[in-house]
Amino acid sequence: MQLSAPPYEERLTAPRTWWLMCFLVGVSMALILLPFGTLPLLGGLVGGTAVAAVVASSYGSIRIRVVGDSLIAGEAKIPVSALGEAEIMDQEEARAWRTYKANPRAFMLLRSYIPTALRVEVTDPQDPTPYLYLSTREPERLAAALKAARTEA
Image 1 (cartoon, rainbow, N blue to C red):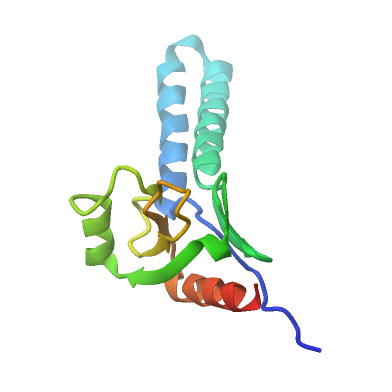
Image 2: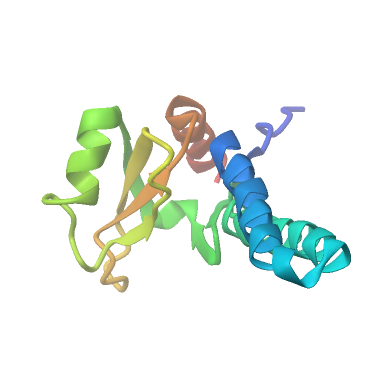
């Protein structure tokens, strides 16, 4: 009996500096409400920080998963049988594929604060998408998970 490969899951969370910016938004709201008194000042601090934190958290809640025979990247779900070779990209190559090498028909799960990425060819002739560009902190693990899922399928 052969065990299946462990599934891959990564959450593309926002960097720590964004949480500092959330607090600074709250401080800004508190300063705006300072002329109205202490209670509005505290409300602005708490409310502004909370709203900014919700926005940062929702932007950083996107996930990349390899589960069973599918790659789930954000809202896209692609069977691994429709995917070709995966190319691990370092910081310079990832920037090139985000800018001047990018194809407008490509699926790009892009987070600019993540320097590395994985580019996966789409081999399905019915799909007009030439490749997937996935920002990931662990491109080697993601490529290995896709390869393992492809061999199991």
